[in-house]
Length: 181
Image 1 (cartoon, rainbow, N blue to C red):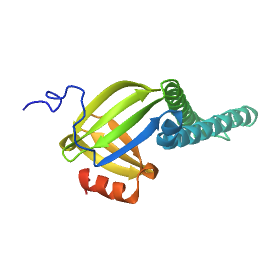
Image 2: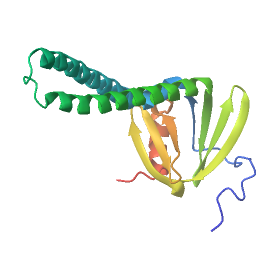
Image 3: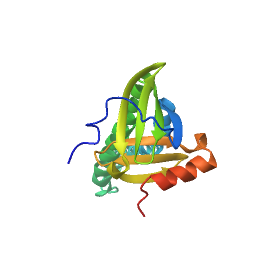
């Protein structure tokens, strides 16, 4: 089966796109997409730190009054260290991804046609790339947090900002994209 990009030479079709929209791919968008990772990172870190504080407190009490804490100190240590570690790693990698996205800020311009869609990536006024994707390559389409997320079969996804679409464009886009129930 020939690749959809075989006949694509970097030129958009002559016809007018059915829907055209754009979105800034920057740290603000990354923060919106990473909200749950940040939340889990904070919760895991706080619970893990509290478990370690409780462990230290019970260790001191155990030294003063032997036999009072029992196996609770070992459980708190075994529970607190992994949670704190996971929470800190989640925070570190999520904040790093946000920082990297702020440095590499760009804009995606989407042109949706009847048979496929094009994504033109721009950095400032310079076009850095154009990708053509068939709707059959879409593995999943989800709407969340004011975005339409178009997941491809190769694992990448394209976010589309819903507030930049008119009601008729949003309806047409829902017809074009293969929403899976």
